[in-house]
Length: 207
Image 1 (cartoon, helix red, strand yellow):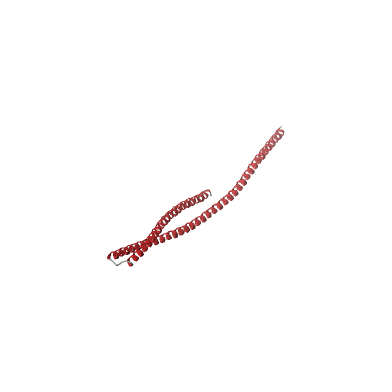
Image 2: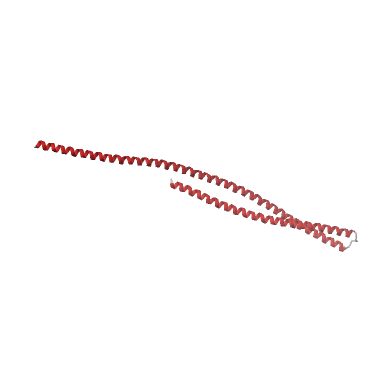
């Protein structure tokens, strides 16, 4: 019974150790995800700032272009003006392409951030379910250990009662043995007395 109790206790300690290791591993995973989310947030903020700057620059370009168009409308058409307009249009197209690229990167980043958030929630739920199951199993093992301990105490109590009964039986046997010794001694004395009396009677008869 003692070996079984030690075995159950070792299982309990092993379960606690495994749980601590799992909790440490989960903490490291969560820390890694938090760092990844922090980096994504930083990149997201930087891209938002870049997009805002591009939008502001685009507005300024539009205003400059409108001003240039006003100047062109009030002046004679010339090859220089046409060339300037072409350059401005090219710049506007390049900025538009850059803005679209930034927007695409921003959308990809938002999507990646959403995946990280969903993965964090899913991992958190899995860890919570795993911890709940481990807590249930641990409680079940503790209950079994407590029940075994109670049964062991009951068995020890019954064994102590048997031992007490055996001690009383041994004491009674010793007492009976001592009384029997005394009785035998008395009977031996009586026999010796009778033998002496018998000898005296024979001596009288022979005389």
